[in-house]
Image 1: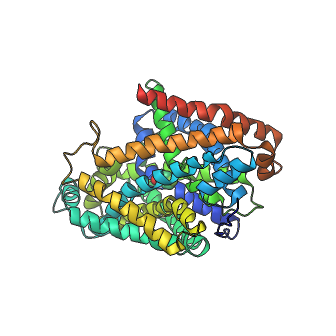
Image 2: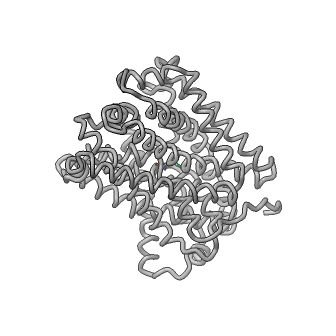
Image 3: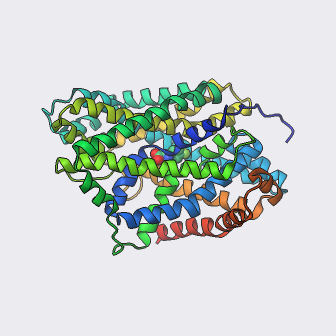
Length: 447
Ligand code: PFF
Protein backbone atom coordinates (compact mmCIF):
# COMPACT_ATOMS: atom_id res chain seq x y z
CA UNK A 1 0.00 0.00 0.00
CA UNK A 2 1.55 3.33 -1.02
CA UNK A 3 -0.26 5.77 1.16
CA UNK A 4 0.57 5.81 4.88
CA UNK A 5 -2.53 5.49 6.93
CA UNK A 6 -2.88 7.46 10.12
CA UNK A 7 -2.29 5.31 13.20
CA UNK A 8 -4.90 5.07 15.93
CA UNK A 9 -2.65 3.89 18.79
CA UNK A 10 -3.20 0.85 20.99
CA UNK A 11 -5.06 0.09 24.20
CA UNK A 12 -3.04 0.43 27.35
CA UNK A 13 -2.78 -2.89 29.21
CA UNK A 14 -4.37 -6.22 28.70
CA UNK A 15 -7.70 -5.47 30.27
CA UNK A 16 -8.73 -2.56 28.09
CA UNK A 17 -9.40 -4.78 25.10
CA UNK A 18 -11.38 -7.23 27.23
CA UNK A 19 -13.43 -4.41 28.74
CA UNK A 20 -14.01 -2.71 25.39
CA UNK A 21 -14.94 -5.90 23.53
CA UNK A 22 -17.16 -7.06 26.40
CA UNK A 23 -18.70 -3.59 26.42
CA UNK A 24 -19.45 -3.98 22.74
CA UNK A 25 -20.89 -7.44 23.21
CA UNK A 26 -22.98 -6.70 26.29
CA UNK A 27 -25.91 -4.55 25.27
CA UNK A 28 -29.63 -4.46 24.75
CA UNK A 29 -29.38 -7.88 23.06
CA UNK A 30 -28.23 -9.50 26.31
CA UNK A 31 -30.77 -7.81 28.49
CA UNK A 32 -33.96 -8.26 26.57
CA UNK A 33 -33.07 -10.74 23.85
CA UNK A 34 -31.37 -13.67 25.52
CA UNK A 35 -33.41 -14.09 28.73
CA UNK A 36 -36.73 -14.16 26.93
CA UNK A 37 -35.54 -16.57 24.25
CA UNK A 38 -34.09 -18.85 26.91
CA UNK A 39 -37.33 -18.79 28.84
CA UNK A 40 -39.62 -19.50 25.92
CA UNK A 41 -37.53 -21.59 23.55
CA UNK A 42 -36.53 -24.52 25.71
CA UNK A 43 -34.87 -23.24 28.92
CA UNK A 44 -31.64 -25.09 29.60
CA UNK A 45 -31.98 -26.76 26.19
CA UNK A 46 -31.83 -23.33 24.50
CA UNK A 47 -28.97 -22.25 26.79
CA UNK A 48 -26.98 -25.35 25.74
CA UNK A 49 -27.59 -24.73 22.04
CA UNK A 50 -26.68 -21.08 22.50
CA UNK A 51 -23.41 -22.08 24.22
CA UNK A 52 -22.68 -24.46 21.38
CA UNK A 53 -23.20 -21.64 18.84
CA UNK A 54 -20.92 -19.37 20.85
CA UNK A 55 -18.19 -22.01 21.00
CA UNK A 56 -18.24 -23.42 17.49
CA UNK A 57 -19.27 -20.34 15.49
CA UNK A 58 -19.08 -17.17 17.61
CA UNK A 59 -15.67 -17.50 19.22
CA UNK A 60 -13.94 -18.86 16.07
CA UNK A 61 -15.21 -15.83 14.10
CA UNK A 62 -14.25 -13.49 16.94
CA UNK A 63 -10.70 -14.92 16.89
CA UNK A 64 -10.59 -14.35 13.11
CA UNK A 65 -11.78 -10.76 13.36
CA UNK A 66 -9.27 -9.93 16.07
CA UNK A 67 -6.37 -11.50 14.22
CA UNK A 68 -7.14 -9.63 10.99
CA UNK A 69 -7.52 -6.36 12.90
CA UNK A 70 -4.43 -6.79 15.03
CA UNK A 71 -2.23 -7.87 12.17
CA UNK A 72 -2.95 -4.65 10.25
CA UNK A 73 -3.84 -2.16 12.96
CA UNK A 74 -6.34 -0.34 10.78
CA UNK A 75 -10.06 0.08 10.23
CA UNK A 76 -11.84 -3.06 8.99
CA UNK A 77 -11.80 -1.86 5.36
CA UNK A 78 -8.04 -1.35 5.30
CA UNK A 79 -7.31 -4.32 7.55
CA UNK A 80 -9.17 -6.62 5.16
CA UNK A 81 -7.44 -5.03 2.19
CA UNK A 82 -3.96 -5.36 3.74
CA UNK A 83 -4.53 -8.94 4.88
CA UNK A 84 -5.76 -9.89 1.40
CA UNK A 85 -2.82 -8.23 -0.37
CA UNK A 86 -0.31 -9.79 2.05
CA UNK A 87 -1.84 -13.18 1.30
CA UNK A 88 -1.62 -12.50 -2.48
CA UNK A 89 -5.37 -12.26 -2.78
CA UNK A 90 -7.60 -9.69 -4.45
CA UNK A 91 -7.95 -6.40 -2.62
CA UNK A 92 -11.69 -6.62 -3.19
CA UNK A 93 -11.88 -8.48 0.11
CA UNK A 94 -12.08 -4.95 1.53
CA UNK A 95 -15.74 -5.20 0.57
CA UNK A 96 -16.19 -7.08 3.86
CA UNK A 97 -15.18 -3.89 5.67
CA UNK A 98 -17.67 -1.87 3.64
CA UNK A 99 -20.43 -4.34 4.46
CA UNK A 100 -19.53 -3.94 8.12
CA UNK A 101 -19.59 -0.17 8.08
CA UNK A 102 -22.93 -0.11 6.25
CA UNK A 103 -24.38 -2.61 8.72
CA UNK A 104 -23.03 -0.45 11.55
CA UNK A 105 -24.71 2.73 10.32
CA UNK A 106 -28.03 0.92 9.97
CA UNK A 107 -27.78 -0.88 13.33
CA UNK A 108 -26.74 2.25 15.21
CA UNK A 109 -29.60 4.22 13.64
CA UNK A 110 -32.25 2.18 15.46
CA UNK A 111 -30.10 1.14 18.43
CA UNK A 112 -29.74 4.82 19.30
CA UNK A 113 -33.50 5.44 19.22
CA UNK A 114 -34.17 2.50 21.56
CA UNK A 115 -31.24 3.46 23.81
CA UNK A 116 -32.65 7.00 23.85
CA UNK A 117 -35.91 5.56 25.22
CA UNK A 118 -33.83 3.82 27.94
CA UNK A 119 -32.28 7.17 28.88
CA UNK A 120 -35.72 8.78 28.99
CA UNK A 121 -36.95 5.92 31.22
CA UNK A 122 -34.32 6.70 33.87
CA UNK A 123 -36.34 9.84 34.56
CA UNK A 124 -39.73 8.28 33.94
CA UNK A 125 -39.00 5.43 36.39
CA UNK A 126 -37.55 7.81 38.97
CA UNK A 127 -40.70 9.92 39.01
CA UNK A 128 -43.37 7.35 38.16
CA UNK A 129 -46.11 7.12 40.75
CA UNK A 130 -48.15 4.53 38.89
CA UNK A 131 -50.96 7.01 38.17
CA UNK A 132 -51.09 5.90 34.58
CA UNK A 133 -50.46 2.29 33.65
CA UNK A 134 -47.09 1.25 32.29
CA UNK A 135 -48.59 0.47 28.91
CA UNK A 136 -50.24 3.89 28.67
CA UNK A 137 -46.94 5.41 29.69
CA UNK A 138 -45.06 3.54 26.94
CA UNK A 139 -47.71 4.47 24.35
CA UNK A 140 -47.39 8.13 25.27
CA UNK A 141 -43.58 7.97 24.97
CA UNK A 142 -43.53 6.40 21.52
CA UNK A 143 -46.36 8.52 20.18
CA UNK A 144 -44.30 11.68 20.56
CA UNK A 145 -41.81 12.05 17.70
CA UNK A 146 -40.35 15.16 19.35
CA UNK A 147 -39.51 13.44 22.61
CA UNK A 148 -38.11 10.35 20.83
CA UNK A 149 -36.01 12.65 18.63
CA UNK A 150 -34.64 14.53 21.62
CA UNK A 151 -33.52 11.37 23.41
CA UNK A 152 -32.19 9.82 20.19
CA UNK A 153 -30.14 13.00 19.71
CA UNK A 154 -28.86 12.93 23.29
CA UNK A 155 -27.77 9.28 22.98
CA UNK A 156 -26.14 9.81 19.59
CA UNK A 157 -24.34 12.87 20.94
CA UNK A 158 -22.93 10.90 23.91
CA UNK A 159 -21.72 8.19 21.52
CA UNK A 160 -20.14 10.85 19.29
CA UNK A 161 -18.39 12.54 22.24
CA UNK A 162 -16.74 9.33 23.44
CA UNK A 163 -15.63 8.14 20.01
CA UNK A 164 -14.36 11.54 18.91
CA UNK A 165 -12.12 11.70 22.00
CA UNK A 166 -10.07 8.84 20.51
CA UNK A 167 -9.15 5.24 21.10
CA UNK A 168 -7.17 5.72 24.31
CA UNK A 169 -8.70 8.85 25.79
CA UNK A 170 -12.27 8.27 24.65
CA UNK A 171 -13.26 4.62 24.26
CA UNK A 172 -10.42 3.16 26.38
CA UNK A 173 -11.05 5.52 29.26
CA UNK A 174 -14.85 5.27 29.15
CA UNK A 175 -15.02 1.47 29.16
CA UNK A 176 -12.92 1.47 32.32
CA UNK A 177 -15.68 3.50 33.96
CA UNK A 178 -18.74 2.05 32.24
CA UNK A 179 -17.97 -1.66 32.58
CA UNK A 180 -17.32 -1.82 36.34
CA UNK A 181 -20.44 0.33 36.77
CA UNK A 182 -22.44 -2.10 34.66
CA UNK A 183 -21.09 -5.07 36.65
CA UNK A 184 -21.99 -3.49 39.99
CA UNK A 185 -25.49 -2.45 38.87
CA UNK A 186 -26.15 -5.91 37.52
CA UNK A 187 -24.94 -7.65 40.71
CA UNK A 188 -27.16 -5.31 42.71
CA UNK A 189 -30.20 -6.15 40.54
CA UNK A 190 -29.58 -9.91 40.82
CA UNK A 191 -29.22 -9.66 44.62
CA UNK A 192 -32.42 -7.66 44.72
CA UNK A 193 -34.13 -10.38 42.69
CA UNK A 194 -32.85 -13.06 45.10
CA UNK A 195 -34.02 -11.21 48.21
CA UNK A 196 -37.24 -9.60 47.05
CA UNK A 197 -38.31 -11.40 43.88
CA UNK A 198 -39.56 -14.83 42.98
CA UNK A 199 -36.10 -16.21 42.30
CA UNK A 200 -37.00 -19.88 42.18
CA UNK A 201 -39.68 -19.30 39.56
CA UNK A 202 -37.15 -17.34 37.49
CA UNK A 203 -34.66 -20.20 37.74
CA UNK A 204 -37.32 -22.65 36.61
CA UNK A 205 -38.37 -20.39 33.73
CA UNK A 206 -34.80 -19.91 32.51
CA UNK A 207 -33.38 -23.37 33.06
CA UNK A 208 -36.08 -26.05 32.98
CA UNK A 209 -34.85 -28.07 30.03
CA UNK A 210 -37.46 -28.71 27.39
CA UNK A 211 -36.11 -30.63 24.46
CA UNK A 212 -39.55 -31.28 22.99
CA UNK A 213 -39.73 -28.06 20.97
CA UNK A 214 -36.13 -27.98 19.82
CA UNK A 215 -36.00 -27.71 16.05
CA UNK A 216 -34.35 -25.84 13.22
CA UNK A 217 -35.84 -22.61 14.47
CA UNK A 218 -34.16 -22.97 17.86
CA UNK A 219 -30.79 -23.26 16.16
CA UNK A 220 -31.53 -20.26 13.95
CA UNK A 221 -32.64 -18.19 16.86
CA UNK A 222 -29.64 -19.18 19.01
CA UNK A 223 -27.20 -18.53 16.19
CA UNK A 224 -28.73 -15.12 15.35
CA UNK A 225 -28.62 -14.20 19.02
CA UNK A 226 -24.96 -15.30 19.25
CA UNK A 227 -24.01 -13.14 16.23
CA UNK A 228 -25.77 -10.03 17.44
CA UNK A 229 -24.70 -10.50 21.03
CA UNK A 230 -21.01 -11.00 20.25
CA UNK A 231 -21.10 -8.01 17.83
CA UNK A 232 -19.73 -10.17 15.02
CA UNK A 233 -19.59 -9.76 11.28
CA UNK A 234 -19.59 -6.00 11.12
CA UNK A 235 -16.14 -4.85 12.02
CA UNK A 236 -16.60 -3.68 15.61
CA UNK A 237 -14.49 -6.47 17.04
CA UNK A 238 -12.04 -6.20 14.11
CA UNK A 239 -11.64 -2.47 14.75
CA UNK A 240 -11.09 -3.07 18.47
CA UNK A 241 -8.66 -5.88 17.62
CA UNK A 242 -6.58 -3.33 15.70
CA UNK A 243 -5.83 -1.62 19.01
CA UNK A 244 -4.91 -4.81 20.88
CA UNK A 245 -1.30 -4.92 22.09
CA UNK A 246 0.86 -7.37 20.12
CA UNK A 247 1.77 -9.46 23.15
CA UNK A 248 -1.84 -10.22 24.09
CA UNK A 249 -3.07 -13.75 23.50
CA UNK A 250 -5.98 -13.70 21.02
CA UNK A 251 -7.60 -17.08 21.67
CA UNK A 252 -7.87 -16.94 25.46
CA UNK A 253 -8.98 -13.30 25.27
CA UNK A 254 -11.80 -14.26 22.88
CA UNK A 255 -12.92 -16.95 25.30
CA UNK A 256 -12.97 -14.40 28.12
CA UNK A 257 -15.12 -12.00 26.10
CA UNK A 258 -17.51 -14.76 25.00
CA UNK A 259 -17.85 -16.06 28.57
CA UNK A 260 -18.41 -12.64 30.09
CA UNK A 261 -21.06 -11.85 27.48
CA UNK A 262 -22.90 -15.10 28.22
CA UNK A 263 -22.59 -14.58 31.97
CA UNK A 264 -24.16 -11.14 31.67
CA UNK A 265 -27.00 -12.49 29.53
CA UNK A 266 -27.79 -15.13 32.17
CA UNK A 267 -27.47 -12.62 35.01
CA UNK A 268 -29.82 -10.25 33.18
CA UNK A 269 -32.42 -13.02 33.19
CA UNK A 270 -31.81 -13.58 36.90
CA UNK A 271 -32.27 -9.86 37.53
CA UNK A 272 -35.42 -9.36 35.46
CA UNK A 273 -37.58 -12.46 35.86
CA UNK A 274 -37.67 -12.68 39.68
CA UNK A 275 -39.22 -9.19 39.66
CA UNK A 276 -41.63 -9.99 36.83
CA UNK A 277 -42.84 -13.18 38.53
CA UNK A 278 -43.09 -11.64 42.00
CA UNK A 279 -45.76 -9.32 40.57
CA UNK A 280 -47.47 -11.99 38.49
CA UNK A 281 -46.64 -10.22 35.24
CA UNK A 282 -46.20 -11.90 31.89
CA UNK A 283 -42.63 -12.35 30.66
CA UNK A 284 -42.45 -10.70 27.24
CA UNK A 285 -39.67 -9.91 24.86
CA UNK A 286 -38.01 -6.77 23.63
CA UNK A 287 -39.20 -3.31 24.57
CA UNK A 288 -42.47 -4.66 26.03
CA UNK A 289 -40.52 -6.61 28.67
CA UNK A 290 -38.57 -3.70 30.09
CA UNK A 291 -40.66 -0.65 29.23
CA UNK A 292 -44.03 -2.12 30.16
CA UNK A 293 -43.77 -5.24 32.34
CA UNK A 294 -40.80 -4.10 34.39
CA UNK A 295 -42.03 -0.52 34.79
CA UNK A 296 -45.31 -1.87 36.02
CA UNK A 297 -43.41 -3.98 38.59
CA UNK A 298 -41.34 -0.96 39.65
CA UNK A 299 -44.55 1.02 40.07
CA UNK A 300 -45.84 -1.52 42.56
CA UNK A 301 -42.71 -2.25 44.58
CA UNK A 302 -41.14 -0.62 47.61
CA UNK A 303 -38.39 1.82 46.54
CA UNK A 304 -39.54 1.11 42.98
CA UNK A 305 -38.57 4.59 41.78
CA UNK A 306 -34.99 4.10 42.90
CA UNK A 307 -34.65 0.50 41.71
CA UNK A 308 -36.33 1.41 38.41
CA UNK A 309 -33.96 4.32 37.82
CA UNK A 310 -30.98 2.07 38.63
CA UNK A 311 -32.21 -0.55 36.16
CA UNK A 312 -32.59 1.95 33.32
CA UNK A 313 -29.15 3.43 34.06
CA UNK A 314 -27.82 -0.14 33.71
CA UNK A 315 -29.57 -0.54 30.38
CA UNK A 316 -28.30 2.82 29.09
CA UNK A 317 -24.72 2.09 30.14
CA UNK A 318 -24.83 -1.29 28.40
CA UNK A 319 -26.21 0.36 25.25
CA UNK A 320 -23.59 3.12 25.29
CA UNK A 321 -20.63 0.74 25.58
CA UNK A 322 -22.06 -1.08 22.53
CA UNK A 323 -22.92 1.97 20.46
CA UNK A 324 -19.36 3.34 20.62
CA UNK A 325 -18.11 0.08 19.12
CA UNK A 326 -20.66 0.33 16.30
CA UNK A 327 -19.50 3.84 15.42
CA UNK A 328 -15.76 3.12 15.61
CA UNK A 329 -15.12 1.17 12.35
CA UNK A 330 -16.43 3.96 10.09
CA UNK A 331 -14.74 6.68 12.11
CA UNK A 332 -11.43 4.81 12.05
CA UNK A 333 -11.66 4.50 8.26
CA UNK A 334 -12.40 8.15 7.51
CA UNK A 335 -9.76 9.41 9.92
CA UNK A 336 -6.96 7.00 8.95
CA UNK A 337 -7.52 7.87 5.28
CA UNK A 338 -7.01 11.49 6.39
CA UNK A 339 -10.30 12.44 4.76
CA UNK A 340 -11.21 14.29 7.95
CA UNK A 341 -10.01 14.66 11.54
CA UNK A 342 -11.22 12.11 14.09
CA UNK A 343 -13.78 14.57 15.46
CA UNK A 344 -15.16 15.41 12.02
CA UNK A 345 -15.19 11.72 11.06
CA UNK A 346 -17.17 10.91 14.19
CA UNK A 347 -19.51 13.78 13.37
CA UNK A 348 -20.07 12.55 9.81
CA UNK A 349 -20.93 8.95 10.76
CA UNK A 350 -22.98 9.96 13.81
CA UNK A 351 -24.94 12.37 11.68
CA UNK A 352 -25.62 9.66 9.13
CA UNK A 353 -26.88 7.29 11.84
CA UNK A 354 -28.93 10.09 13.37
CA UNK A 355 -30.64 10.88 10.06
CA UNK A 356 -31.49 7.23 9.32
CA UNK A 357 -32.68 6.95 12.94
CA UNK A 358 -35.39 9.53 12.24
CA UNK A 359 -37.10 6.82 10.18
CA UNK A 360 -37.16 4.57 13.27
CA UNK A 361 -38.57 7.43 15.37
CA UNK A 362 -41.36 7.88 12.81
CA UNK A 363 -42.01 4.16 12.53
CA UNK A 364 -43.43 4.31 16.08
CA UNK A 365 -45.89 7.09 15.22
CA UNK A 366 -46.47 9.01 11.99
CA UNK A 367 -45.15 6.19 9.80
CA UNK A 368 -46.71 3.39 11.80
CA UNK A 369 -48.72 2.38 8.73
CA UNK A 370 -45.81 2.60 6.34
CA UNK A 371 -44.40 -0.81 5.39
CA UNK A 372 -41.39 -0.67 3.02
CA UNK A 373 -41.42 -4.48 2.95
CA UNK A 374 -44.45 -6.73 3.42
CA UNK A 375 -45.16 -6.95 7.18
CA UNK A 376 -42.11 -4.88 8.08
CA UNK A 377 -42.27 -1.26 9.15
CA UNK A 378 -39.30 1.07 8.59
CA UNK A 379 -37.43 0.04 11.75
CA UNK A 380 -38.02 -3.66 11.12
CA UNK A 381 -36.84 -3.29 7.53
CA UNK A 382 -33.59 -1.64 8.65
CA UNK A 383 -33.13 -4.35 11.29
CA UNK A 384 -33.76 -7.10 8.72
CA UNK A 385 -31.19 -5.70 6.28
CA UNK A 386 -28.53 -5.06 8.91
CA UNK A 387 -28.92 -7.74 11.57
CA UNK A 388 -30.37 -10.59 9.57
CA UNK A 389 -28.60 -10.09 6.26
CA UNK A 390 -25.46 -7.91 6.42
CA UNK A 391 -24.14 -9.06 9.80
CA UNK A 392 -24.22 -12.82 9.09
CA UNK A 393 -23.01 -12.18 5.53
CA UNK A 394 -20.01 -10.26 6.91
CA UNK A 395 -19.35 -13.07 9.41
CA UNK A 396 -19.54 -15.74 6.74
CA UNK A 397 -17.14 -13.87 4.44
CA UNK A 398 -14.68 -13.33 7.31
CA UNK A 399 -14.78 -17.06 8.09
CA UNK A 400 -14.28 -17.95 4.41
CA UNK A 401 -11.42 -15.47 4.05
CA UNK A 402 -9.54 -16.65 7.13
CA UNK A 403 -10.33 -20.32 6.58
CA UNK A 404 -9.58 -20.55 2.88
CA UNK A 405 -7.73 -17.49 1.58
CA UNK A 406 -5.54 -15.95 4.27
CA UNK A 407 -1.93 -17.00 4.37
CA UNK A 408 -1.56 -19.59 7.12
CA UNK A 409 1.86 -18.37 8.22
CA UNK A 410 0.37 -14.93 8.94
CA UNK A 411 -2.41 -16.55 10.94
CA UNK A 412 0.03 -18.67 12.92
CA UNK A 413 2.26 -15.72 13.70
CA UNK A 414 -0.72 -13.76 15.06
CA UNK A 415 -2.04 -16.66 17.13
CA UNK A 416 1.37 -17.23 18.75
CA UNK A 417 2.21 -20.60 20.25
CA UNK A 418 -1.28 -21.91 20.45
CA UNK A 419 -1.73 -25.53 21.49
CA UNK A 420 -1.79 -27.50 18.16
CA UNK A 421 -4.99 -29.30 19.14
CA UNK A 422 -6.77 -25.99 19.73
CA UNK A 423 -5.39 -24.68 16.46
CA UNK A 424 -6.69 -27.66 14.51
CA UNK A 425 -10.10 -27.42 16.15
CA UNK A 426 -10.37 -23.70 15.46
CA UNK A 427 -9.25 -24.21 11.86
CA UNK A 428 -11.87 -26.90 11.38
CA UNK A 429 -14.64 -24.69 12.80
CA UNK A 430 -13.63 -21.64 10.80
CA UNK A 431 -13.26 -23.51 7.49
CA UNK A 432 -16.28 -25.75 7.62
CA UNK A 433 -18.67 -25.22 10.49
CA UNK A 434 -18.94 -21.41 10.64
CA UNK A 435 -19.49 -20.74 6.90
CA UNK A 436 -21.87 -23.64 6.42
CA UNK A 437 -23.91 -22.74 9.52
CA UNK A 438 -24.36 -19.19 8.33
CA UNK A 439 -25.25 -20.39 4.84
CA UNK A 440 -27.81 -22.61 6.54
CA UNK A 441 -29.33 -19.55 8.30
CA UNK A 442 -29.66 -17.78 4.97
CA UNK A 443 -31.22 -20.70 3.17
CA UNK A 444 -33.68 -21.32 5.98
CA UNK A 445 -34.66 -17.66 6.02
CA UNK A 446 -35.27 -17.72 2.29
CA UNK A 447 -37.45 -20.78 2.62
N1 PFF B 1 -23.81 -6.79 20.99
C1 PFF B 1 -24.75 -5.72 21.17
C2 PFF B 1 -25.93 -6.21 22.00
O1 PFF B 1 -25.98 -7.40 22.35
O2 PFF B 1 -26.81 -5.41 22.26
C3 PFF B 1 -25.24 -5.12 19.90
C4 PFF B 1 -24.19 -4.87 18.87
C5 PFF B 1 -23.06 -4.13 19.18
C6 PFF B 1 -24.32 -5.42 17.63
C7 PFF B 1 -22.06 -3.96 18.26
C8 PFF B 1 -23.35 -5.26 16.69
C9 PFF B 1 -22.22 -4.52 17.03
F1 PFF B 1 -21.27 -4.37 16.16
